[in-house]
Length: 148
Image (cartoon, rainbow, N blue to C red; front, side):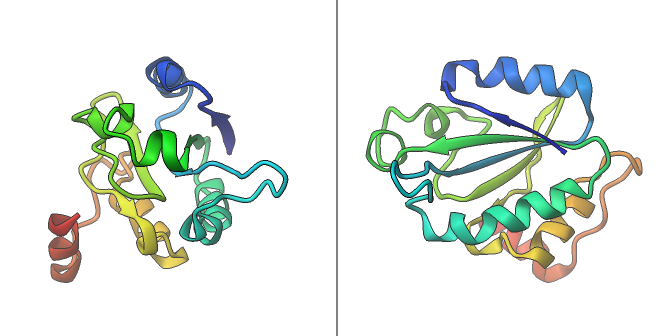
């Protein structure tokens, strides 16, 4: 797995497009930025999800993970947050994991407590384009996805 840090929101599209030229397994993780001094995210769900996301995405052949840090006050809570305003992302909570393709982000996303080991594995299977079809959702997952 290759990781790419998105330090500047203005570079997001260029980095995603570059990743898509190198791989069809491109994932984007929005998470709480690390606090200076501790190097730990201010978001407790992100601290739990981060190693799980890395481990499971790392098992996907030729995968690329774009890491997009979100600041507590200047980004996450701001109406001017680029990723909140974008119609294709609509970031509302973190962590948020999206699979990206040339058509844009998948309609299915993992958010907050859904970023468990089992949830990430299922998400990878659901959004796997190499098989030519997505794994069908269970009825309970369909309800959960429509609630996202």
